[in-house]
Structures are given as C-alpha cells and as structure tokens.
Amino acid sequence: MLGIVEQPTSQNVLLIGATGQVGKSLLPFLQTKYQVAVLMRPKTFQENPDKVKALEDAKVVVRQGDLTDEESLVAALKGITVVVSCAPIPGISLQFTLIKAMKRVGHIKRFVPSDFGSDVRIEPDFVPSFREKLELHQALFESGIPYTIIDNGPWMVFGAGKFGNPLNPDFSLSPQEIRFMGSGDSPIITQTLEDNSRLTAEIVADDRTINKRVMVDVNVTSQKQLVESWVRVGGPRPTIGEPITEEEVMKLIEQATDPRVNFGLRIMRNVHFHDGLKRTDDYLSTTELYPEVTKQCLTVEQYYAKILSDLRKQSA
Ligand SMILES: NC(=O)c1ccc[n+]([C@@H]2O[C@H](COP(=O)([O-])OP(=O)(O)OC[C@H]3O[C@@H](n4cnc5c(N)ncnc54)[C@H](OP(=O)(O)O)[C@@H]3O)[C@@H](O)[C@H]2O)c1
Image 1 (spheres, rainbow, N blue to C red):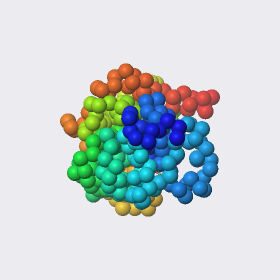
Image 2 (image 1 turned 90 degrees about the vertical axis):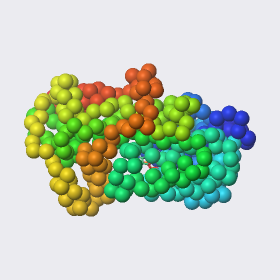
Image 3 (image 1 turned 60 degrees about the vertical axis):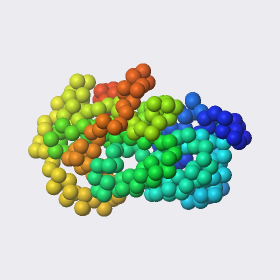
Image 4 (image 1 turned 180 degrees about the vertical axis):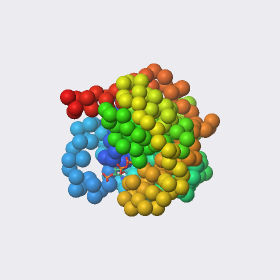
C-alpha cells in the first residue's frame, strides 16, 4: 500500500478532491511533508483511467470512496491521521458525513475542511456556500475533532485582475478609465493558487495552527493600492471614474444569470462593501507564521510586471 500504514504511527494524510482545482495543486506540496493517500469516487475511478494513472504516477495511494457513503469513508480513513478536504461547493454539506466517519474511527488528529475562500461569518446568507461552510464549522467544533480552517481570498487573477473589480476593462498599455467598487480602500487578500497550496502545506504540518483559523495572506492590498502597484511597475495610470455603488452591484447581481458571474459579483460586493476580507484578530496570518516561505510567493507587482511584459510582447 505504498507507505500508508494500516494503524497510524505517524502522520498520514487523506486528501479529498485531489482531481479538482485546489486539491490537484495542493497534492505535490503535501507530498513534500507527508505520506498522502487520496479519496476517489468509484465512478471516477472506473471511468477516468487517466486520472487514476496521474495519481499513481505521482506515487499516491488511491482509495475509493465517496463523501455520500459513510462506510466507504470509514474504510478510506484506515491508518490516516490528517484529513484535508478540497470538496467542491456543491459537496460542502456532504462533509457532515465525513465528520461522522472521522468520529467513528477516532484517530484523526486534524481535519481541514474545504474552505479556501473568505470569512464565511460575514454575510453567510448572501454568498452561495457560506451558510453551508459555517454550519459545517459548527458541527466540527461540536465533534471535538481537532481542526484548522484555512481561508485565502480570491486567486490573483480575480483579486488583482482588473484592479480587483470584475466590472473594469482588461489591462491595456493605453491609459483607461476604471471605477472602484465603493471607496477603493476595502482590504483585498490575494495570491496565486500555487502559493496558496505552498502555504497550506505549511499550515497543515504546523502544531501552532491546531484548532485555529489561518488566513493565507501573501498580498494584502486594496483597489487604490492595486492602481499604485500597476503604476510602480510601469503601467499607464488609469483615470478613476465615479465609484460603483452597492445598489448598482445589487442590480447587476439580480440580472446575472450565469452562476459564475453571479457568484463573482456577490463575492466582490462582500469584499468591497462589507469588508469580507478584513482579517479579524482570531485568524493567524501565514505572513507572520512563515515569513521565509512567503518570500517565495508572487507579489502583486511581480504579477503586474508579467502582464505588462506580455502586453508589450503582443504589441511589438
Ligand atoms: N479562493 C478562491 O478563489 C477559490 C476558487 C475556487 C475554489 N475555492 C474553494 O476551494 C474548494 C474546492 O473547490 P475546487 O474548485 O477545487 O473544486 P473542484 O475543482 O470542483 O474539485 C472538486 C473535487 O472534489 C471531488 N469530489 C466531488 N464530489 C465528491 C464526492 N461526493 N466524494 C468525493 N470526492 C468528490 C472531485 O472529484 P471527481 O474527479 O470525482 O469529480 C474533485 O476532485 C471549495 O471550498 C471552494 O469554495 C476557492
């Protein structure tokens, strides 16, 4: 069984959602610290030999199981001490079954539920999945299973792209008019998916983060500061139009039939009008916990410098 022992003697991780966006990126970073097994749905296992091969090539043990099936989870948890879930948004509530299974086996030393977003205590009924994540946290606290809640804000492409406002035009070499959502001063926390994974692996391996909330906060900025970062690396200074009001955003949300656009607008309304990414005192900060690892992460200015360089190449 490729290194995963039947009875836990050291830290063995079960990663859930290893074929998804967040889980796939996290897997190699977890593997630098742990023996990792992954949970795969039987249907996915049967119908996607390419996914199975990719995982086996990465030297992980593939255990079949489904978040909807408690018995399969109990079996998959054999020898496991740490569970990291990257379940998708529609699967957040399925993690209640996982909590039951972890209680039954009794040897889980840490559970990281699928969060990786904003503080879900702010406007839980406005942004899809926030209420479900919040209720799962409550069940987890009551279960007594040690946990770590990890949040991170939007990935850089969304958090720093278009100066943090999805309604702005794409970056350009010509000066353009942009607008802030609200004052332009609300905090934005953002990093790349890869840097989120790099730091998540550190958090999972760190005893200081047991029973804590941790914010992956490589870049803490604002719409106004994003403009200054862009100008500092040589981008043309945009003119700033009238601020977009919360009422305007609400109207756009009502009109947005594409669920991804609708979700994105709700998140950005939460961030820009309700301080959705203001790190409260009960979050630990990865910048403070892991300063050396943070130095390896992409800054907003490096991200903007790359965009500028690509735009210049295209226009040459
Ligand atoms: N901060 C951000 O900007 C940001 C962006 C995206 C997501 N997120 C957060 O990250 C988390 C993960 O999202 P994601 O985008 O990575 O999801 P995703 O790409 O949809 O991946 C979901 C994974 O879960 C597996 N899965 C689905 N249903 C399952 C079940 N019943 N039992 C076992 N495994 C199951 C899927 O496996 P199959 O191969 O079987 O389908 C897949 O590996 C969410 O909490 C989301 O809110 C944050």
